[in-house]
Image (cartoon, rainbow, N blue to C red; front, side):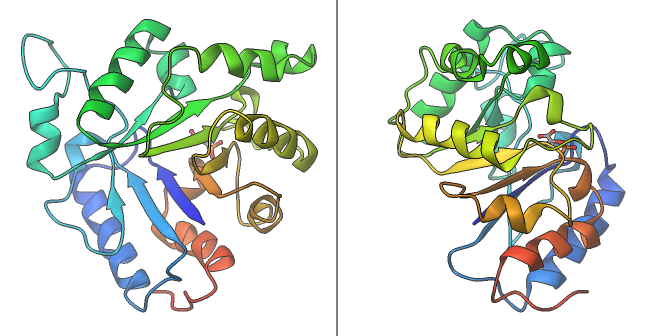
Amino acid sequence: MILAANLKCNHTRASFEQYAKALEEGLAGGISREDEILVFPPASAFCARVKNFTQGAQNFYPAAHGSFTGEIGGDMLAEFDVKTVLIGHSERRAILGESAELIREKFSFAAARGWRIVFCVGEDEAAFAQNCSEEFVAAQLEGIDLKYRNLILAYEPVWAIGTGRSAQCEQIEKMLRSLRTKSSAPLLYGGSVNAENIAKICAIKGCDGVLVGTASWDASKFLELIRVVSHRYTSLP
Ligand code: PEP
């Protein structure tokens, strides 16, 4: 299973240092070889070195460097050895106004460098209500290389993100099945995953892991989630 933590705009450099320490210690006993932990902290909090999990970037601008005020380019990620990136998160699409064109540019830039891409898709409330989730997601995948070797796809219905209202297993299974017809990439579900529902979600046919927001912001809570799905992982800090 892949367990990814999206810390969003939470954690300072000091608090993420504590978070990373807790995770490193908690995972020191080892997790199953089939499991992988990805953590996306704010870019201002990247740790110089991590061992037991992979550090990824929530955002970047598709250039190595240049006149892109406020942005973070490839050179800055390289300094922290960050080669895993989130692209297409609904908050960046809706709140930060990222267009499909910019998202495609980010994808091409990351793919050209061989980075691991966690590409997020998911329908909004209206499309879900109209039973148009598959069409909505298919449109988000237009122009995206679904055969890219270092791709992970995350199905994250917008209405389930940060709401405490996870999608039903039937809906998740249906959407993962639909994604599987398009790509052989690992498939994640994201949207109000927590300690109560993670086992059920990870047991869904076709589910290769989860992308977790709120329930991952506290390292001990994220470790609890890891413990539920990783059979070899037993210790808690
Ligand atoms: C997310 O932001 O990717 C997410 C899944 O958030 P939450 O777990 O809080 O719904």
